[in-house]
Length: 208
Image (cartoon, rainbow, N blue to C red; front, top):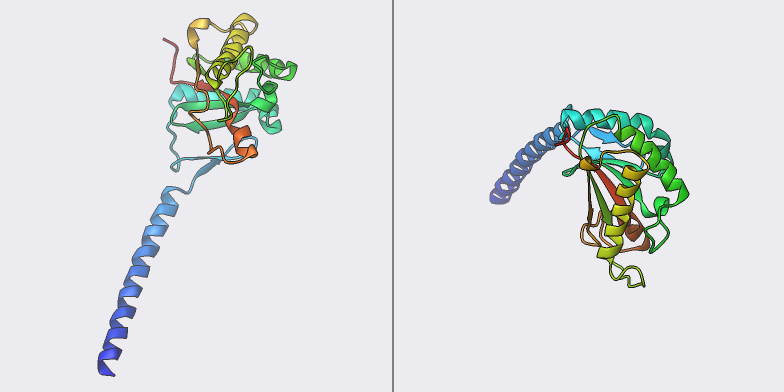
């Protein structure tokens, strides 16, 4: 009985110490990760350390401009404003810009991109336009693969910004990634819809 009592007393002491340590660790993590920047459209968040951002001063200035000028587009879900390792990202879902399997910008998308062009004209950052698809193969008379479709969509946005938006082409570049840079795993129709997009990446500036 004495041995059992000593055993359970020891186990209780160990569990108490571990719990205290765990509590301190949890509190430290909560404090470090406490700030979560809610996106303007209310659909997601940008994890960030309290009072800090990975964006450059030029990107932070661009974010302020975009949040103001594109406020209605962000609220409506036509665009999403994100922050990740690439920089400041204005993401355009396929449903807001293109018919399925098409690289022709809708009228609504052209109006939104006109507002985007006006915002980009106020800042000097270089901009990368990325096309992305889901993992469903495509093979049409116009597009032989998702590479072709994603590249064509990115190029369509670049051409509109240059030819009709008046943006200096030296600031712009285009890339197509097909299905190989998904935002989320392609495990459902909803997930695939999130992956079909064009991302406007506001890079560190000013332009070269």
